Length: 124
Image (tube, rainbow, N blue to C red; front, side):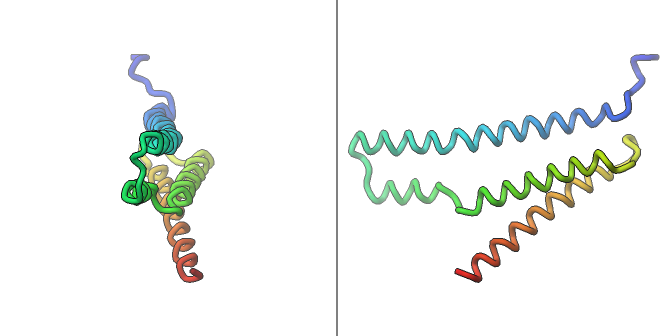
């Protein structure tokens, strides 16, 4: 009977583990992608295969300049939502409040990103 008892908050370890794994994977991707792009460009230059067409093709995959801002704001606000969850009183077993807080916080990050991009495009 003792094996069937759940410790309060034990069910949240699964979702927190998923967030940690997702964050680490995304961070590794962000670290590895520029390095591999640099190595590809260097190799193409060494082989004499570098021309304007390849430059345009690789430049197209470089991404938007505000891409880092977007993901930084989303992760920041999602993290703030997770921190806020620690201070809110709710029932771990019956409440969907933590998911709502995290979703609203991430949405606020998207909204702030959108406002920054719109204001930047108006000034340019």
